[in-house]
Length: 587
Image (cartoon, one colour):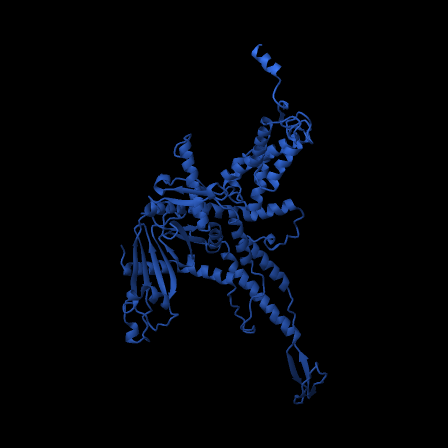
C-alpha cells in the first residue's frame, strides 16, 4: 500500500516526464476542436480559420474504418473431440460476447480508435459492477493517463497506472465531506471550484486521492490551512492483476500520432488564407493618400460618398490610391500546402468525396486508397487485438474473483426460452486462454463482405468460417440453425406445391384448403399445419359412414383418392326372416 505522499510524488514525476508528449496531444486536440488562434492583428477577435480542417476529416475517416468491424474472441476447447469441452468453449465465447454487448463495445471502440490515431494512445480501465454483476470497461482520456514505463512498448498492460480527473467542490463535499472538510486545503472555495482527483491502480489495490488547492501567498491563513492531499478510498484488488490497459501506437521511440506532422502546415495555410482575405479587403477599400502639389498646402474640403453621389472636393493636392496584387502565387501556395498536409497525414481526396484528376478508373482509385489506408487500419486493428486480449483476461479475473460461485445469466437473441443461458464463472472459466482477432485486419466492412463472397465462390473458405468472419452475423451457430430451418421449410413448401398440383396426389382440394386456413388465418407454423392436416386425413380415412351418406362422396376430389369416408354395410329394414335364422343354425 502506497502512502498519499508517494502517490502524489509519483504523479508529479510522470506528469513532468510526459509533459512534452501531452503538450503535443493538446495541440492536436485544439486543432480537432477548432480552438486555434491566428496571430494577425488586423483580423477580428472572433475570426476563425476559413480553410478545410483536413485533420478532422482524416481522423474521423480513419477511426470509422478501424472500428467498422468488430473482432471476435475464440476460445479453443481444452480437449479436442470431447463434446462437453466444445460446448463449454462455445459458452465461454457467448459469455464474453455478452459482456462486450453489455459494455457497448462497438461504440467504445470508435472513441478508442480516435484516441489511438490522434493521441497515439488508447487507455481503458476495468471495474466490477455490483449492480449488473459484470465487468465494465471505462475509456479514459490519454491526456489524463500516467502509466508506468514498460520494457516492451508493445505490452499494453503496465504494472500500475494513475488516472487524473477533475471534480467540483460540491461533489467532493457531498460524497466525501467527512474526509475533506477541515482536513484538506480548500483555498477560496466555491461550489464550482475544481479539484484534481488521482486514481492509482495496480495489482494489489485501488487508491483514490484528492489534491487540495495550491499554496498561494495571497490566501488567508484559514484558507491555507489543511493537507495538500488526502486519501479518500482504499479498495483491495481481489483479482491480483492490474486493471488498467494502455495500448500504444507503433512508433520509433516516443508517442507520435498519425496527424502530428500536419499541425505546422495547417497553421501556415490558415495564416496565408487570412492574409489573402486582408489583402482582398484592402483591394476593395483601398488606402487613399493626399499628395500636395508643389508650393501648395493640400486641404480636403468635403469627403466623397459614392453611395449618395456626393463628390469630394480637394484643394491644393491630389488623391492617390494604393493598388495591391493579393493573388500573386497565393492560390498555388495554398494548393501546395494542402497537398503536403494530405501526404503527411495520409488523407486522400476520397475522404472528402472527391477524386484526384489523374485517376481515370475505379480500379486505380481503389489501389490508391488501399495503399493510403489499408495498412494503417490493419496496424491499428492489430493493436486493438492485443489490447482487447489483455482486457478479456482482466474481465475473466474479475468474474472469478468477485462472483466465482454465483450463477449468472445472459441472453442470446433468437434462441428458444428467450435465448437465456446460465453459467457459473468458476466452472466455465477453467482457463482464460483464447484469441482475439479481426476476421480480415485492414479491411473495412464493405471490402470485407466482398472478399468473403469471392473466397466462398472460389471454394477457399467454408460457409461456417464466412459466418464467423462476417461482422453482421452476431451468432454464427444461430445463423447456421436458421439457414437449415429455412432450407427444410423451403423443401417442404416445394413438395406441397408439387403434390397439390397433381390431381392424383395426396393433397385434395378440401385438405389443401384446411392447410391454407391453418397457415394464413390461425398463423400455425407450416410443419405443424402439415402434421394437423395429415392427422385429420388419417382420422377421416379410418372412420366409416352409412352407405349413401355425404361423407362417403369424393366431392371436388377424384374418387378413391382418400377424400371420402369408407362406406359401411347396407342397413336392413326390420328383423331378418326366420328362414335366415334357421339357416344360420343349420336347420
